[in-house]
Image (cartoon, rainbow, N blue to C red):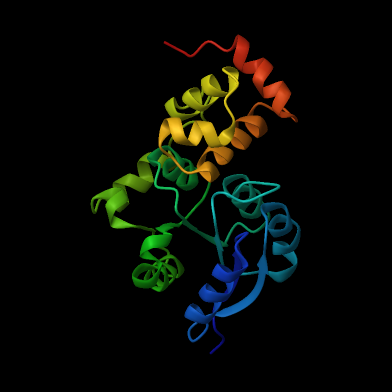
Length: 211
């Protein structure tokens, strides 16, 4: 019996190697990519059963990359393996087609289980994110309308950008990782169809949050 085919996407090479060694007894790792655009470009040709990807990646973030892969390969199962525990991000991942969401801190105990579960047609999320309510959790977020306004966290990041703060400074103010700040920044740019940081800052200067 052939092993399920798996693609990996993360910009940390050592982590990719670790994941590969960890899952290979049961799964066939057929490729690994260092950014979201490479994943989108290469996934269709490799026809994976599962894609394991990070949320925060260079060139194209994981949510947008996963969504594009899902459009090309409707049957593929997406599992996000990430440090990002922001519930807005988790919600968006499932709305865009994810079947699993695993925190990297729980990978050793949960990743293989998550892969088995999604291959059976189920869903999985690290329990601390869902309090055991994965069924209703997923269905609620898959039914969400596409976001038409910025999240509270995105509003905070946008305001601090408008005040001239660097991403490192924003991370310190909000007590989040710099990678998380970068994720919110580039997600806003993609959603708003802006191509430069300067355009985003100009937008920030005129943006009024919804009441």
